[in-house]
Length: 105
Image 1 (cartoon, one colour):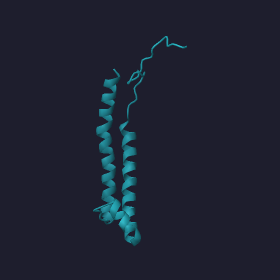
Image 2 (cartoon, one colour):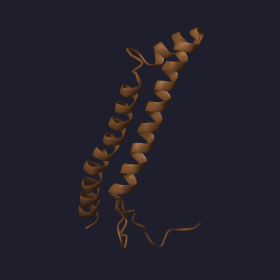
Image 3 (cartoon, helix red, strand yellow):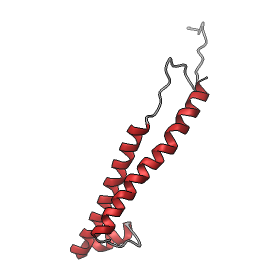
Image 4 (cartoon, one colour):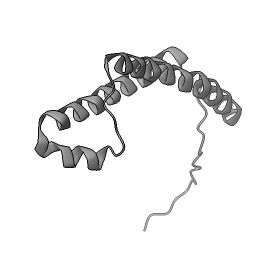
């Protein structure tokens, strides 16, 4: 019969020599890319629904209340997606780094 001679402690926040921090540039670029791809797929789905009538019920179910913008609207949508990714990164990364540093101390 084996017995435990030592007890092990499990830390929810293990001690790390250099805590990981998030870079605003990396997170901003990745979020902007994600939003740009999602918006392009969204507009592509709407365009496909206008070209192929049998896809229209599926797209209208997945994307309700959607209007296909013109070229100017598409460009403005891309700019807004880009700005939104950087805005979220500018708010999220410093707050994450602050709380990660506070919880690791």
